[in-house]
Length: 93
Image: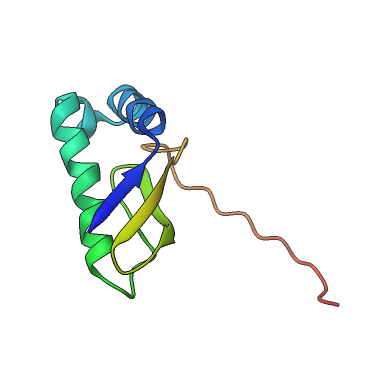
């Protein structure tokens, strides 16, 4: 299986996590890279998996087939902050 992702997104994600997440700050850049790529490999191997993540990042299987998978990497800007719930009510059409 061939996995692709935006390299700039990966390095920006690693920098963000090392700055914002105390657990990620204890890891080297290479360890984080391997961790995130490992998440991609686990998701790529599972046909039912569309996304996965932890530590404040999420990898999303954006374009995929039998022999390839492209991933987008996103981060949660509120990692390690208290959780605050918001409810929005709207009427459906």
